[in-house]
Picture 1 (spheres, rainbow, N blue to C red):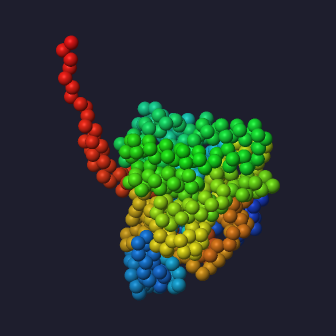
Picture 2: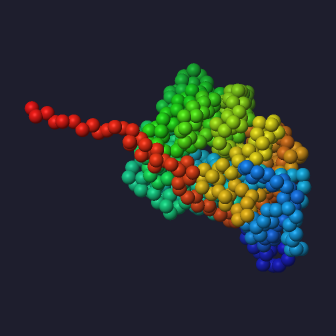
Picture 3: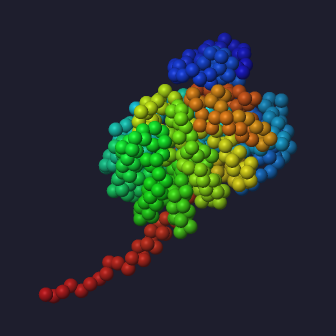
Length: 542
C-alpha cells in the first residue's frame, strides 16, 4: 500500500509518523481491523500512513457525471493545491497530473457528517474512535468533513474547547465543532460569545435528557435560546423528556427488565415527541431557529412537519441508524449483540424507519447524520446487569454515505442530486461553510468522491476501518460504492486502500448568522407591532 520512499529523510518521517500512530492506538480488542494491528489490512507496520509529499497536488477526474445539489453534468474536474480549479468537459493536462477515470461513475462533493462523537468521555468510558481512527473510517466511506460536539469540562466552554483542540491534533480530515451547554450562568453566557466570535463555533446543543448529568430545564433552555439568537448561533436540542425517561428507567428495573430491551421500553417515542414539540414551541416563543438532532421517531418527525408547515424555522436531522434499522435487535438473546444497538433516543420499532425515509424524501427532514459514538463490546458490558449502565452509541461514520445511497437512491425515493443535498450541501449551508464545502464548483475545497453505482459490497466489522469490534449493520449488502475519496486535494482512499496522514486535517471555523436567521428582525418587528400594547390608561383621581 505504501510506496517506498526515495530519501532517507522521508523514511525517517514515516518512522516518526508510525511511532506517533502506535502511541495513539494502544491495543484494546482482538479485532483485525485495528490500525497497526499485526496482519491488518493496512499491510504491515506502516498502517496506511503515507507522507503527504507522495500525494500529487494536481488531479484530473475525467469523464464522470459531476453532481451538485441542483444540477448534474458530464464533465472533467481539475484540482490543484487542494482547490477545484475547473469543471468543464475535455480538460487537457500535462504529464505531472494524476488522472482518475470516472467514466460511468458519479463525481460528487465529499460527505459532511453533522453529528459525531469522537474521543468523547461518556458514562464512565471514552468512545473507542478518536479523531484519527474515526476520521480515517469516514474517509473510507466517502465523508470528508464532520462536525463533532465539544463537551464542557465542569460546565466550562473554554476548558472543553481547549481539551478538544488537543484531542483533534491527530486529525486526518477537516472538521468543525458544535458546543454543548450543560449548565447556565453569566460565565457560560459570556463564553458563548467568545466561542462564536473567536473560535468559529456557530451552534450550541442543549440536552433535554440525561437527568443528573447533561440535562437542563426549560428555564435554562429559554435563556440558552435567547443567547443563541443574539449571537446568530443555531440552537440544537437532544429532544427527550429527561424526567419521564428517568421514571421509565425506574419502572423497567422494578418490572425486572434490566436488559437492553429495557432501554427502549424506558424511553418510548411519545417522550421524544413531547420534548420535540416543547423545544419547537419554546424556540418559537423566543423566535430563533431550531435544529433537532437525531430524529428517531414518527412522533418527533410529525412535530417537525407541523412546525415547518406553519412556517417555523426548524431543521430535522435523522441519523442513518434510525433510517435503516429497527429495535428488534434489542430483544436478541445474546447480550453482546443486543447491547451494541443501545443508543439514545433508541432505535425504534419497525415502521418508524420507513416514515423517516419518507420524511427525508419529501423535505420534512433536511439532512442525515450518524451520531457516531462507538463503544466496544467490553465497554458495553458495563451494563450487563443494568441497561442504564450500557454506554449509549452506535457506529455509522463510515457507513452513512453507502447506506443512504442504497436505501434512498437505489429504491428510487430520492434523486442523485437530492443525495448530494442530504449528505453534504445542506449541512454546509446550515453551518455556513458553503460553497467552500458541499459543492463541486470552481474555488471550492477539493473534497470529492467518485461513486460507482454498479458496485456492491458487504458491511462487516472485519473489514470496516473503525476501531470498533462490532458493527450494527453487520452483514448488510449495499449497492453503490465509494471507490475514490479526495480530501483537501489528496487521494486518501483508492483501490480499497487508505492513505492518511495524522495531523493533516484542518479545523474549519464556521461563521454565525446562517440563512435561517435571514428576516428574523422583520418577524420580531411584526410581533412588536401586533401587540397593541402597552395600553395608555387614565389614572384615577381617587
